[in-house]
Image 1 (tube, rainbow, N blue to C red):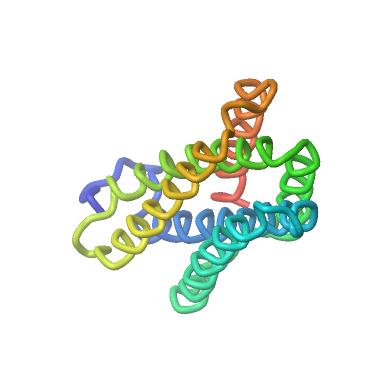
Image 2 (cartoon, one colour):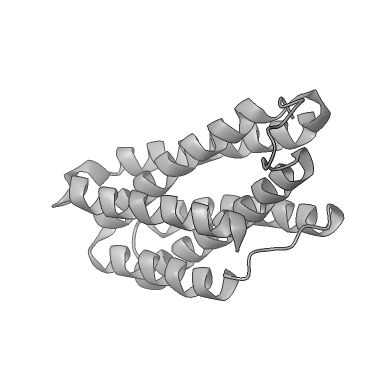
Length: 181
């Protein structure tokens, strides 16, 4: 970590890494659930293959963070059951609004995660290079998902700015909560 002398009351390097792993695990869990919800609605549409591709990448991210939860002995968030329902519901609801709204959801989530992962990358030092490289690789895939959403006309969704604003706010709140609970 790039914080040699934390302030009194500040989280230790270990606590910070635990928060990163906990919240990233929760986020990838939620993302996999969002795509599962979208596929439940759009699974027979022309968008099914691209949604499945993104879901598989999110599942890989989740598998890696699940392994880190175990090997680093990090307590996962107690809110996984809630994120399962919330993620699936968000995915299904946006997909029910149509493929463009599903893609708008993807854009909103991935833009939020991009900023989140970028912040984590910036704080991880040489002692956590493997974790930083993992996050950087996953961040690149999240940006790929955002670009897929934009290429599939996410911005043409009626109420795009309102919808993505609400989803981004929800993602930021989920990040704050999952880091601690």
